[in-house]
Image (cartoon, rainbow, N blue to C red; front, side, top):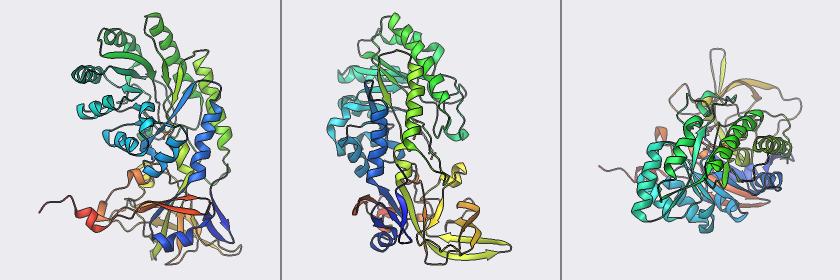
Length: 420
Ligand code: LLP
């Protein structure tokens, strides 16, 4: 499906709603999400893997808006969580989905493990022997048997930004695949630990699919050994990481998911395990935009700066990973209007507070609205209050209907936890 942000009568719309109207009604900066795009992306995964038993466990960290989680839960999604906070979000939106939760992360704490055991989640993706010991101890204390998968580190290289690559032995993630077999053997001795699956995740924003196949082939070989050792391995968790195109090039999402499914199928050979998938970005990134208003256009020497009311605290991806986001005006320029070349920046007091540098952009003026595209994943979830800036509001668009998913923060919200 095409991107949900399109011009109609020269005004940028999200599905059937004008972004100019949204800015008037809800203010800026504003995160805008297309509900139908999120559902479509989820269904692409459902269809591509329809021929085998599978559960799509959406990675909550990509966008943890309750409204979006509920939308996905109602369509049968499971969830990949990394904290007690994310667990609580799932409990809040759809209790039956707790049974389809996998819990990832390298530093789970006892209280988080306890909450997840009591919630009877599907499996813990364990990332160290120390965590496995803690899991056994908490399971025993609560009298609840824990289903676990070791997250193995397959030592597979996947080309992406170094900050979001995870599948090499030099990374903090997972357990060396070579020592996994011995750890399963030891764990199986505890009556509180149930060897249930094997999991892997090699990184994020990965555009080639071969690394996924390579990682999964190594996991599948391990699963065969584990079965031989007498463990009843039920699930193979392939992690997330399928990338999108952040440029304005045409993007065939269905084709991308199909390529991905073919690669995973190849890696799995004929293993019949229940496949778990943890896509985050691919489901929500292109469904979202950050809508912002131009405050100032200024020149310093030879450079032009477009200063918007959104900043790095609202969307940190460009500052953190030099990520590219398309930036387009809400009012479509006419054919003959010339572009300017400018840095698009926020009001935060850091030179790192930029959305784009030396970018050709429409000749915007103060008061104009612009949209940063593909901001649905790792946008709001990575937002902060730096510079004591309240975080944006979020709206979910469904056709022509607009639902406020999160109200704009107030200064009062910001100060509330503080003690004088
Ligand atoms: N599963 C695990 C264990 C993960 O660590 C992640 C992402 C995912 C699934 C989902 O990956 P996805 O399908 O979204 O690529 N903040 C960065 C991305 C960090 C990804 C962290 N882990 C960014 O804005 O690009």
